[in-house]
Length: 429
Image 1 (cartoon, rainbow, N blue to C red):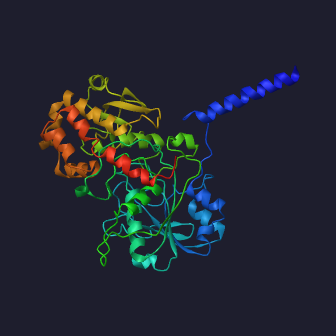
Image 2: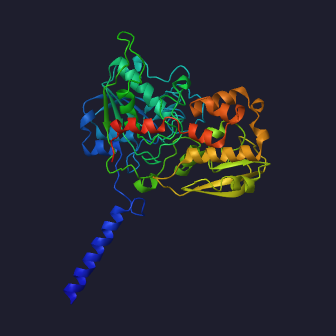
Image 3: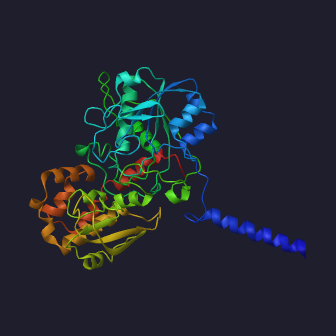
């Protein structure tokens, strides 16, 4: 009897364990390793004996929260010549668009130089000349408008021109790898907030993006051959990550990648509100304690706005009415009626760009006077076009007054083709 009891327990336990492993997004946490963890497990063999230029910020860390810079230094396998940082600097102190002064930061005895600014988005020949390889390790957030992919692009371009190998230490996409949402960028609107013809929510890791840039010939043309440059690229994959996983499934701790991305939910919020916040019609929570997780204005009728999107599919999003007072930014120090977005991550069905558009379309029906193009400043129109990746979305919303369905169809322009294209570069199941 005792044997039969324990045998039954073992069967039940095994069955339960198999259920857990088969259930995406359960409370079970998976053993995911970043590229730097994999490199460490390989005894740093790929960089042994090399002089390295490291492109990173405070988000580049091992699973144990050791910075990539420290991990490389402690390995004593390579020499770090210099540290290059993206927008916001190494520690994420600078706000969006703010220039970081040269050598304004020192990290573990090395002066960090910025790759953000009109004249210095690309590593110089002098910086790369003494190195044997460039290592890139920055946590991206999975949105085209976030500038870290642009920094990666220009690092690739410089490595291609100056014949330096690039090693990308890959990391999970915190939004998961299945969501593709928002129109593909029109290359006429290529900028630092939209560097490549990919959707706004692209579902790629930084490593997959780098492979795509190389494979599709998206780097600038070589002056001699008149052909697109190619970078000598090695991607060290993140182990254990699967495309359905969201940030919570990795069990990693989120390190703020910039001042207004303090949490993984801020990423989801930016995917939903970020583009439309460029219009200046509403506060999106920047300047309050929940950046990008709100739509708000002093005179907003939140009940009617919520009613306007009631029939739309807001999978993974709970929208609730609230009030708050921004400390700075849009409507600073004014009491605002708002909608607070609470997210239930779902790597399969969550469509944040589309959901944000649904709210804008409902707002257009509710308050059409806001959608007079003459009321939008030219600099806001320009920035909206850059972040959206096209000027046609503004034209359809404000000028032509296109139908809701026509705009929704346009907002998925190129998504099907991109989904097929990216299959060639996917590193994860």
